[in-house]
Length: 388
Ligand SMILES: [Zn+2]
Image (cartoon, rainbow, N blue to C red; front, side, top):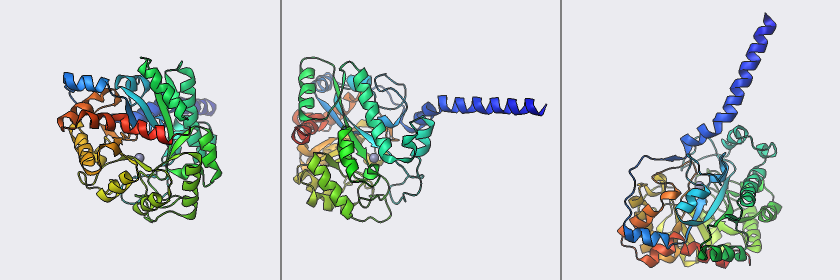
């Protein structure tokens, strides 16, 4: 009798574990990366024609964190290759989240806890990723690489300027090719080792975000405890990124880190996904002063699509933040930084991006400005700063 009970309980527990691992990843993402209910967007003939003539590029999406095949169209999240194609997106920067504290907030987080470990285990990532942030970044790059290999040439991982030119040529000839570029979201992914910058470079990383929600070995996060500047390690890391030709992203870095990186980096800075304080006054967002200085150095400011960045996440609301940035620093330094699949709720996934082109026309931006913000600036920047 006791034996029978033990067997029944064991079978039940096994079944529950199997169900959790089978259904858990979808359940997890469905709740976290939402598309808010909305009516179909009205796109005028003018906006539609302009949008289909654009080469669109987005500076930030966390898609590789989630358990799905990006070559397949998914009914959850915001980005996959079929939806990028539908939205006319040529280049997507794929950022790699490797650690996120519990009870995330924009004001102050310690690095004592981590929600990503549970997600990594639930999604059955290899055991090497359970305790190493470097391995979590590396594994996400490997997943993009594998997808590119399976894609029959429709997805390309950008490593060099020549890769980019080949993609642009192919698209000009009518081929459906989408390019991905690997980035870190926080350089705690180095596991504290400078040599891992070269290792991540070898795995295809070409942009590195210095911080995420907590202070790390490089210096203070915008949402950390210290609000400090760069450490010696952080300065060495920037020098090594410059040496290798890795672009530097200061989204989520403390204001003193941005100041010091502006002075130290030999290449212009990217702030891949942000809002502007002039429209949406939150500590998450960038000040007019930093916008001016990043732009003066030749850098790019990517505007996000979520409520915390723009206060009004409708296409019209996002267009307002973009128009403000264009007015302040000129259209050559403003870009798209959706933060798709970054635990964000948005009013349109990437397949519906023409709605943003329409909203920018409604803001009276010129065709030249829209062309630049939607992708022209990002492409010019990559042409200049990707390794030859
Ligand atoms: Zn972020």
